[in-house]
Image 1: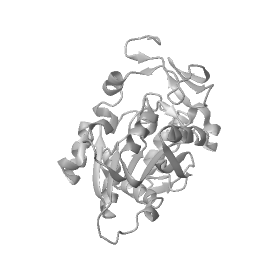
Image 2 (image 1 turned 90 degrees about the vertical axis):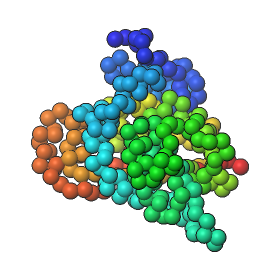
Image 3 (image 1 turned 120 degrees about the vertical axis):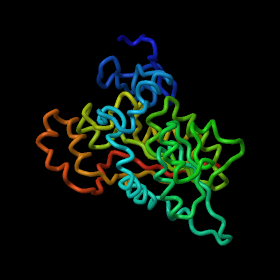
Length: 301
């Protein structure tokens, strides 16, 4: 296969549109590059939308035999760990949503909601919730708890005209999108007056990412199309008409079990999982490697 193979695209920078970039490293036919204009790190060539859906986001994505390259080892099996992680992340937002004197509930939209675990946490907080999820299988799982009307299959384009939300979330979504600025712009348009947008994505400039280089566990070239740092993430929000209120790695960690750590250790050395196998029996614990960022933003006035 070469870079011009059917289903693959050579792409320019998704942030500034620049065509000049410097290669960080090659990964098969793909290259991880830095835009010479704005500094965005991205992958080129990449699969087109149809090929991504067929080859990357197929049914095995959520129970992947090669999760360090794409997808999850067992997404549904991590349900309680996911909820615990989202409850931790909720701490970043809680102060922005005091109880209303009228008792009227806040409305929230989770973009890329998967099985709806963040929606579960929002319901605990008294929100009325909506979710959007491109995967039919995951949308059906979310509908099982939140109802068919609450969960749409697709993206922001599928929302009914005029529907607005007090909170819009994009957890681990932005890095998967070929045009993240457009997605942020569409989300901003759906914010109610005074509404909050929250997103989480990986930080390619973090100490861990710099230390590990090409072995960094978020370099999953099949699915992660762009890699932000604080500067380029700020540029993306500005271009989308958003004003950043807070950007931090605090509360951006996850609850994981020992099996997750063993599986991801293969990135460092192929033989490491065998040596660390006893860790697989460990229970769930919270870990924050400092290589993910949570951004809280509002529509720019």
